Structures are given as structure tokens and as C-alpha cells.
Length: 199
Image (cartoon, helix red, strand yellow):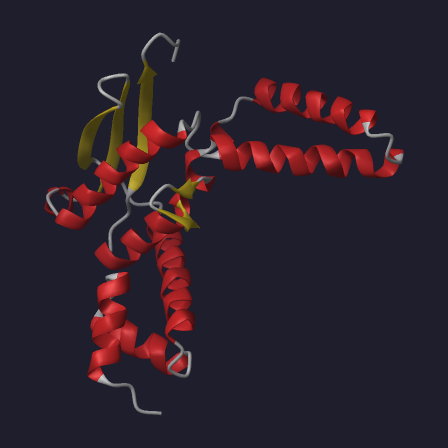
């Protein structure tokens, strides 16, 4: 099958991946554009996993003020080199992330950051709610675990759907960027302030 330069260019523009990667993804997917995008996303996540052990001592701290000064966010995102810290893709990602935190109000970066006592307290609430449904004992734990998964998706930044494209999570977005840039990128910390509320 022949892949045209126009198709490669289109895929590059949509994903930001390298020309050869786009060509390979289109070949592997038999010219199916959506399938090629999926392939590139998957490869980006695989690249991110490979690079995740590298030190991220450079990066940016971004601030974002929203809703007429009623919500403010400070976020720190690390990368390996100051060259990448000055890269427009990286800067744009950090800015979008700050906007996302303002809008989606995550409490933690990953599910590993959720304190054990919070997990236990939530699970106890979900178990009680499950009991109240009158369902058989053997599926109550499954119901509670399902609700806990929803909790993670709602309050853990990496698992939240991205506000600008809810078909991908922040983790997938980060994976794509790592795949494009070729460096480890790490969301280190954030703080979100809302007028009149304790953070």
C-alpha cells in the first residue's frame, strides 16, 4: 500500500509525531488514519514509561488565574533539559495543565498520592452505599471498588479526561508529549486556590 506525503503531513500535524513514525503508523494501520493516531498514542505512552526513571531537574512553574481572579493555580512540571523547558510544545502543555487544574479541581497527581486513610474512608462509604442497595453480599465489594475507580478518575489529575479533549486523559496527553519531545516529563506538584475555600 502506498502512503502519500499528504497523509503523512496530516498525521504529523494532528499528532506532532516524527515523519518516519507517522509513515510507519499509517503503513501498520493499512492507511486507517484513526488507527494510526491510536498507534502513535500507544507508542508515546510506551516511550514515556521507558523514560520515566530519568531525572527532571529543569522545567517550568506556571501560574493561571481564572474566573475574574476567583480561582488561581500554580503548577510545577519538570523535564530533563532547559532546551525542552523553552520548547513551545512543552510551555503550551504546562499552560494547558494549569488551566485544566483550575477547571477540573484534581486533589492528587496519581492514585498513589491518595493517602491510605482517604482510600479507606471512601471505601467504607461505598461499602455502606452498596449494602443499602440490597444486592447480594458477594458483589458488594465489586460495587464499592467500581465507585473507588470513579473517585480516582474524578480526583487524580493523571486519570482525569483533558478539558480540551475528553477522549484522552492527562496521562495519555503527557505520554504523547514525551513521545514527541523525547525526554522524561514529570508533573511534580500543583496547588489550586479558590476564593473563600480552604485548599
